[in-house]
Length: 500
Ligand SMILES: *[C@@H]1O[C@H](CO)[C@@H](O)[C@H](O)[C@H]1NC(C)=O
Ligand SMILES: *[C@@H]1O[C@H](CO)[C@@H](O)[C@H](O)[C@H]1NC(C)=O
Image 1 (cartoon, rainbow, N blue to C red):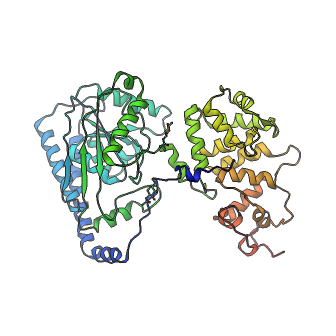
Image 2 (cartoon, rainbow, N blue to C red):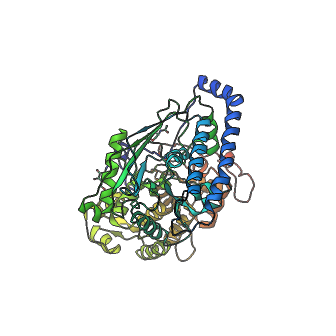
Image 3 (tube, helix red, strand yellow):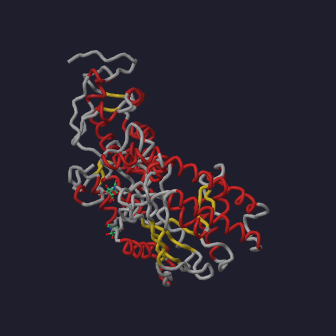
């Protein structure tokens, strides 16, 4: 792909990571707390959670999914007990006092509260304080104890396995929202995933599709040492719990912002509605907006041996694809079909108009930008195979094997299969987002320093042999590395003999 100067454009900021660095003093403090306060707190927190269970369980008896039962005295009593128990649980966890600013609007006025930023499971605090419903994965219902507690607040369950789950979730939110306060309010974390609170990522439209007033709620954890943030890259769930319980006090702030009533235009356009609410919340928080979304997270934290190294260009491409509607239109089938057509072109380079035709799209500004990403020579022509490899990478960032297979199918010659060294380098450059890639290490690992062609199975074998494939076998810009034959295992399991 074209060398871009995206390093300066600011897309590089990745809010899905949380790097926690502890100073010596902090380490000592945590060490001391770990053997004194921590076990006591953990015990108490567990105790209160277990204590909550029989109450939540009793309340769940005789409940139906679709109708709300009358608020009898005993249900009110259970509700009160649960609130007290949960508050006691957080108290024991070090959340001694929680500052609440603003006022929550009644359910009859506002059916939906949009909460941000979402950064941790401690964001459950406002939920247990209000006993609002949330949107939760269906799987969470089967977690022992926790599942019963979650069910108590009548979440809108998302069936991840169901093709129509998005639509069904939105319909259920809409149905409840339109009952004018019969159902509990729904708290929706519109970002859809946890970030490190450095900015607000794009909101999912779910809370905004009903076109009803929403109340924005912002959360703050003004602690010096951030032990709260639980993102995709960074300390895991237990470490977060441990470090948080080791803090003397964990401050938290919940602020209810004024109710936001959508204009007619916003009712028609949920994305606009979402963005305007997001802007207000970002302003209240004093953080910037970022154009990253839930889907981008996977690109920035891709896993596997072919983890994306520099995701700037791929992120940019993803955003353009979203704007063109190509992101949602992509499926394995579409990729297969595109790759078949790209293969037929046999490396013929396409100008902008032909590329537009290839995708059956009109020539637009956005499409021009996509085209120019792949115009590495700057001559206005691109190899569509590059586009397909990149599309497959952003579509399934953690399934690099699938993308590789697809790429090999496009590049392999009919007669004897295999792709050329330069072709392999191009494929991997796109997939990893790197430049000036040298793949000689791969051939070295195969015991073929004379290089030539490589088949998918050979490459697969080298990758299997080297869990750290990128660092051990590849050499690229920003990662100059001459592969050492001693480090490379050859594919038949023996150490490769030195031959240079
Ligand atoms: C949080 O995300 C920002 C990008 O928005 C990043 O620059 C920063 O390093 C991250 N903070 C931590 C503590 O990892
Ligand atoms: C986000 O994307 C929109 C267009 O989709 C653009 O107008 C806006 O400037 C972008 N914002 C940032 C911070 O990149």
